[in-house]
Image 1 (cartoon, helix red, strand yellow):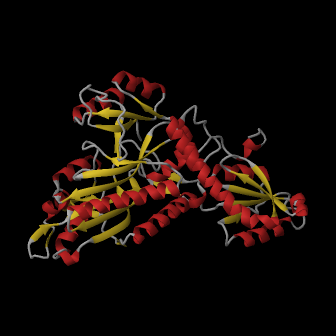
Image 2 (cartoon, rainbow, N blue to C red):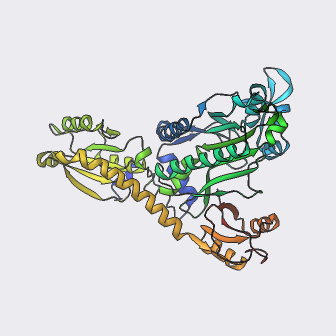
Image 3 (tube, one colour):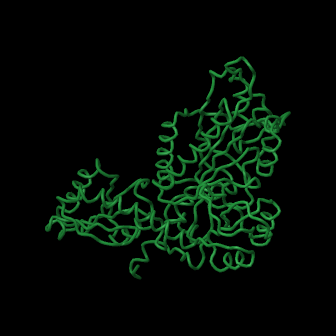
Length: 479
C-alpha cells in the first residue's frame, strides 16, 4: 500500500507485531462491530451481521434438511429449574447472569438469563413426551444467550452472543448417538465448504466435555497465530437429563423408558475463526460463498461521460449471476480500493474509459491481489469460476498452514519446546488419566482439543507420564 493511499484507511497493526491488536483493528476497521454499553457486549453492525446472516441462512437450510423444526423458548430460567441437573448447573454457575428484581419488587426466586437452554427444553419434553409415537423430537432455536465472561473479545468471547442450539429427544441411545454424529457432520460441512476453514473432527475428553453430557463431539480449527478455536460442538446426553427431569415414554410394549437426548450449537464465535484464519495485514478476507458482496464494481474516472452508466449497466447484467454491488460515490478510486480490501470483498471489478474502449474489465482478487483482464463478453462465464478458485485457494491455504503448524511430541520436553517455539497443534499420545491432562495444562497452558476420529499411533507411551498410551490427542493453546 503506497504512502498516498494510506490516508484513505486507518492503519491496521501488523499481525506479526501484535496479533491481538491486529484482530481488534480488523474487527473495527472492517466495520463489523461496535462495543455495547455493558462490558463484554457488542453491537453487530450491518456488514458484520450480513456475513453472519449468510452463515446463519446456510446452516438453517442444512438443519431443516435434516428434519429439524425451529422453535423459540423463553430467555428466562427459574433458579430451581436450572439446578435440576447438578453437573449442568455446576458447569455454568460462574457465568450465569441473574435477575433479582421485577420493577421495584424483589423476586421470590432468582431468574437466570439463559446461558444455554437445556433445562427449558427438558421441562417442555417432560410435559409433552408420553409415547414412542411422540419421538423423535427434533428442535432447533436461533437465540441470544448470556454468559458473564471475565475476559471478553468481540465474537470470540462476549457476554452476550448469538447462536443456534439444537435440542433433540430420541427413543434409544443409538438414535441419539446417530443424531450427535450427524449434526457434527453438518457443522464440518458448513465450516469447511462455506467458510473455507479446515477442521479436525473428534471427541472431547471427559474433562473438556459439556457439563452433564455423556460425551461431546467437536470440530477444532487452527487460527493464523497457531492457537486453536473450538468451532462447533455436538453433545450426546444419554438419559442423564431425562432422569433428572423425568422425561419418560411408553414404548411399543407399554413399558416406561427414559428418553435419550442431544444438544448441539454453533455461534457467532465462528466469525472470529473467519477473521483469524483468512485475514491479513490489509484486513478481512471473506470466502466468496458467504460474502454478502462477492464482487464490487469500482468505476475509474467516473466523471468522464459514459463511465458510470456503463458500470451500472454491468451491475445489472451480473446481479442475477453473483452478489454484486457498485461504488458510484465521489470518493477517489484509491480510497475505494483500500475500503473493499479492508472489508475482504473477494473480487474488485475495475472499469474506466480505456477498458470501455477495449470492451474489457480488470478483475482483482482479494486473496492474492492478482489482476486479470477479461473481455466483457467472457465476464459472465469467468466471474463465477474465479469466485470458486478463490474459495478453493482460501481453503487450501488454510489447510497448508494447519499442516505446517501440526507437530508430534513423544515426551514433555518435546511438547514444551514445540509449544514455545512453534505453537499450533501437537499430536501426542495420552494414557487417559485426567491427572496427566491437568498436568499438561498446568505446565504449558495447552489443553486437549480433541481425540480425533482418525487415530494414529505416534508413540507407545503417554507424553506426560510415560505409561502405556491409550489414544492420540490433539493439544494446543486455545481461544
